Image 1 (cartoon, rainbow, N blue to C red):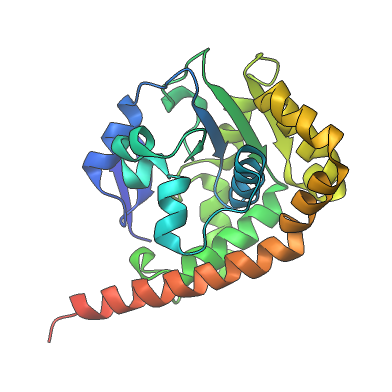
Image 2 (image 1 turned 90 degrees about the horizontal axis):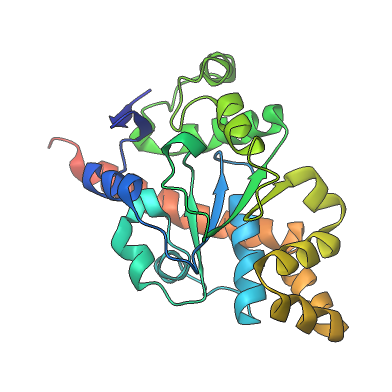
Length: 246
């Protein structure tokens, strides 16, 4: 499987070295909200929930518009975080020891059952040409996952690095399974964590909370994300075909 290592951080070859280095050196602003996870653990779900809480509406449709509104720090570079609309949230897959951590910023960490994460990650990897894993089997990927020989490194070390910070005042630790079991309850906990003004609005406006929960339900998220993934895969396949020697 094709991977790229930048200053000890292992990422996909679709990433740009310069942007990854910018992310590793990024200096958080006091109003930064980071959504942190190992890949395929619920990052996009949390992104949509946070965007709805902050803006009282779903994020824009379209990959470019979404990436501008909810930038992926390592993929897009530090400038994407500096120019994004605020209040807003920044996505990252950095383990704690690589993250430019700040006590003033806020961090929402989401994790997921490792087997479910691995299965989802396998299909993600197999479906994107830059990994060169189109013919790879799940058994092969499973072994690589357990050994940490995938982009973003070892799942268990990643989760543990942030689990150890779960009692920090500026860290909220969430599991995909808990979020699925009690979406509305966790929306309120996330709103409380982001700021009292946001949670008060939802507590006093039950219709707004119900609407937000419906917009960010697992079913609604799967439909939206699957459509975006299909567009991304089609785009990546087109780019890959253009690069082939004639």
